[in-house]
Structures are given as structure tokens and as C-alpha cells.
Length: 393
Image (tube, rainbow, N blue to C red; front, side, top):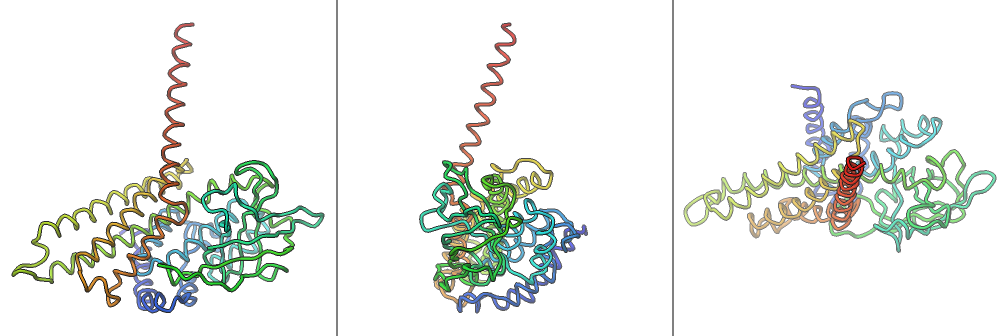
């Protein structure tokens, strides 16, 4: 057994012991599972892919994504919390923070001693980053932030927030910068509002407020007005995690369906002998395997330091829509039993919907994929035209 298999097996054991037993109750109570969050940090999940000098394990992103997938099989909301913390909050700090900031913040974040949030969405800005209105004005000491962020995962429990703010009036995504804002900063607080959601209910979602909040210069990530460059790395990485969550959901409901159709009998024979049931099972299996291959391709490209922008969009798009279909069919296969809360199917059905929305909607993923196809086609055409010109010369 390879080392990654050992790690995933140990991760599955942790999930079975710590997360699975509380998943239904946490969803019902819409309660953030703080103890489970801490134990995942102790296990090393958040630092799987970060260097040992910051408290990480120094492994690859493929292993980290595999662990997120294992968590999602039991509780997609807890997987979402982990992804927002370890990818959306930690990755910009690791990739673009100064060394002092990384050495001070990454170890407690990786250990699960502190909780991170990523604050980009606003009331008038979701997929359209050019509509961001939260502002950071530069001063002699650093920056002063004013604005509000909505639908922020971990908002009410966060100790550290990575905040996207406007530092210039330049058009489009230009003029954005990313800042680390820490709990206790004057004027910075969660409003106390907790969104009442269809799914992912155990994952905290709320609102962050900034009122003349001072941020030191060293808390700027990367360069001023170049925050869009950081987003171009961070968001595709998060899409890998969202695809993993979707696949984990699909795998769990598939297994429940197979067990059910072997036991359940109707009209004198087991459900597994009905061709319409077999079709739904076959679709689940093919979609899971196809999504798995798309995710592996995208994650391998990231691990190899190559562009994975289009591939992350493909994996996220396909896996999320497959999860929505799998959970719908799973409830249909189980009938009234699947519709009731005694089984986790209705929870996974609700949770799966967010995978089609979070970290870029399915519509945005299709635009990304098509745009990358057009760019590649344009380059090929230019190459052919260049070759023709050279030949004629």
C-alpha cells in the first residue's frame, strides 16, 4: 500500500470516528462542529500540502484533495469548512504573504488553533469581481478598510480573514488587492448574522463588517492593485476542492443505493433486477469515474506547476452537476424512505446544490472553459498564419 493510500485510510478512520457520528445532528442544529474542526487540524489535514517549516506535512495537493473527499463522504458541510479554511484562507497567505506573516499565521491555522475565512462576495458582487466596493485607502501606516462582505464561510468563527478590497478605480479586475485582517482589529467584526441555508448547514456562513479598520502594510498580500493575479490562482485551487466534495457526496449516495437495491424487494424480486434502477446506478458510476479522472488531471497539473485553470473548471462543473443528479436519483431509488431524515440522502441532496454555486457557478465554469477554448483556437490560427507567411517569404 502506498503512502497516499495509508494517509487516506487514516483520514477515513478519523472521519468515521469524529465526523460521521455528529453530521446529522450538526446539520439539524445548524451548528459549527468546532471540536471536529480542531481534530482535523491535529490530524494534519489543513497542512497536508504545505511545507514542514510552517507546520505542514510537505505532501502534494493530490493527497489533500483526497482527504477533503473523504470528509465529504460523511459531511459535506465540514468538508466545505475545511476547504474554505485550508485553501481559500491559507493558500493566498502561503503564496503571496511575506515571510513574517507566513511564519506567524500559518502554523496556528494549519494546526486548527485559528480559523480562517476568505472574504470576497458582497451584496452587489458575486461572480463579478469588478463590482467589489469594499475599499482600502492607503495611509502612512498601512491601509484603512471600509465595506461589508456577505455569504462568507466561517465568518462568525474566523480569527483571520483574507479580504479582497478595491485599492484603485481601475476598470474590471484591475485595482483589487488582498489583505489579511485579524480578529481584534478595530472596526472589524462579524455582524452576528448566520445565513439560514438550504444545505451545508453545519458550515458557518455570515457577514463581515469593516469600518475604518486599520491594516498594517505587511498584511498586504502580493502587490497593491495586483490582487486579481492571486485570485487567478486561489479560485481554481478551490474549485478542485469543490469538485472533490461533489465526488465524495456522489460516492456516498451511490454506496447507499447499491446496499438498498440489494436488500429491497418489490414485485417478488430485488430492486437491483429492475432495468430502470440499473440505469440510474450505471449513470452514477460512470459520472463518478469521469469526474474522478477530470479531477486527477487538474490536480496533477497543479502539482506539476502547470496551468490548470480550464481543467479545474471542467472538474468542478462536471462533478457538481453529477452530484446533483446522483443525489436526486438516490432519493428516487429509496422512495419515501429517501425523502425522510432518517437517511442522509436528503441532506446530501441539499448539500450537493451548493457545489453548483460555490467557487464559481456552473454558468461561470462554462464561460471559463469556452473562453480558454477560444484563446487556444486563436493561438493555433495565428500559428498557422505565421507559418504560412514564413513559407511564402
